[in-house]
Length: 236
Image (cartoon, rainbow, N blue to C red; front, side):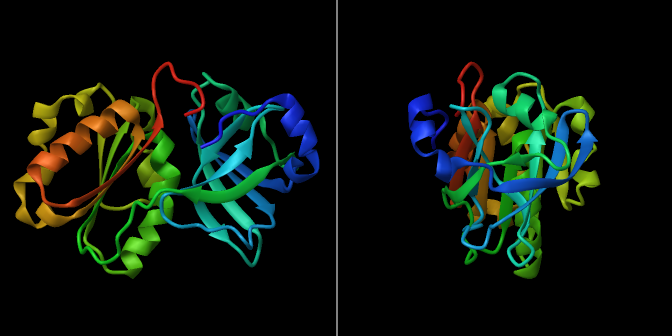
């Protein structure tokens, strides 16, 4: 996915990349988690589970974010941002206020959901909360047994509840999900109904890779994954 382009390319396509969405509402779920409601033309966007929109955060930088909610008729899209104060995207969206305008591009990405599989499992962190919010109503409407696991900073441990998520377990972020032995001892692996589940893993690359490796050895399920960020890497 695109993270940056040369300034001259942006200038060349300025008419295409100009602001096309306005900020309607903003709210902080915690000091690190901000929800913004935008309004614009989203009628042609494809909001599949696992897809993300590219948003312009500077003259040359772009970042990918998943819609937590959308209404094509009203032209509304909600996005949840991790405000970690350590990047151009985080700082940009922290600064946005009601009435500001920005560019939101089309949706595209990777498949993370197989509706034919009964049991659905989701793993992520702060960067994954929007996707979890989009996933929940689909899981409920299709009558899937489901479980969310989140690794979150201490100050964000109540965020899933405040966002209305259900059937979730929060683990305080301490690198446990980079420990294969620790992952093997999770309750997930104690019940056989999850042996053939649909596993969607997103968020930190190292956590996702380790969890994926364990699932491949411990289950016969379908594992879908997408790394959203990696320490020291810009614009993943």
